[in-house]
Length: 222
Image 1 (cartoon, rainbow, N blue to C red):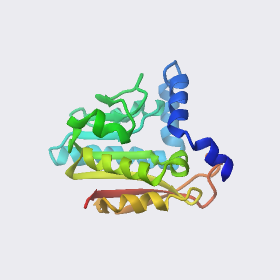
Image 2: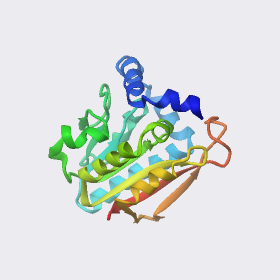
Image 3: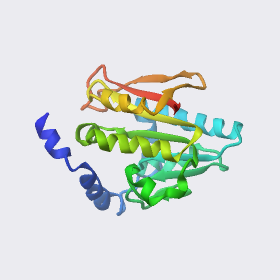
């Protein structure tokens, strides 16, 4: 565990370096590769379904403000999963060649200072593979995790929904969900009752163990 801790201590800095050398150039998936990504992995297939349900929910409730936390080249397709009436925002420290209506160019823990006008702005926030990602769960302090969650609450409307994905099993992320549940309560969303478990395909993601799971939590503010 110690070598990973050393590598991940400056995770934000490492992420920015990778983004600058990768996303800022021509490393953009073709449409075929993007479609393959969304069909290959079990969690991405479930996310694909979730984006469409998010779109239905917003339209049925006369709402249209949706925010994704984090972005990568495969996220170019996400806006296509949504109804055109939805205002789609992504929070990403390095923004280039992405497909959204509004980018917020910062880490979540910087939002309150850099974008105070987004206080209680979004109807739904989704966070897939950011707070529940290995680098964060190993490297962030309790104060950093708490500030991240507080800023999610800051930009979410009082009646908004927060959908959070956390990998369980290989990564010890209980500390993260324990922080989250200080600010949010679990709720149902369509047929999903509070939390959905998706088995990880260890063949396509060898760093995961056979019985590991992705857990998708559906949350509202306390």
